[in-house]
Image: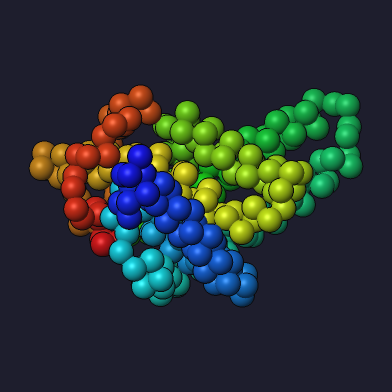
Length: 247
């Protein structure tokens, strides 16, 4: 019982994580106010929460703004692309909803629209954590985000449920929970993502040793990445340092 209330005990660790989530959520929201900086702000958030998931966080404020400055240009570019694509999908959805033609063309367009929305949501969930840990071209980031989301489909579904549950809880049951909002969602998702990204790093290094082209900090996805069931419990394969360029 005494261990429960010690500074390194489970209760105090839980309280610390909860406070960090609220604090990071506030930092994330403030840095998102210009709108165009949402990409860099979300990348910085995941940079910290991915470390928190492995208990490697230091000064969260310094780490957040370090990543924010480092990813400001690239994160803004990626976010503006995603914002444009999201706007196009929104307009398409509005048009399809009001057309409602009972013919094969409308059915095919609607089916294609839903596939595009799912692909967009997958990229949106994965691309900022990838940017927090790897350096790559914009097109490669978009492609890798979609590839990971499809390859680790079970984790993708869990992450989607986390975001949906948080939104539903805030809107329908307890609005003050917005204080934790994105910070808590990012931390919960990071517990799954940290292992996935670690496996990607290890596979990239294995292929580098086998003669494949690999540049430090750049992610390469081989075709033989393990399935979602293979990464559970693998978070201790590397200790101390985070992988890739973003240390």
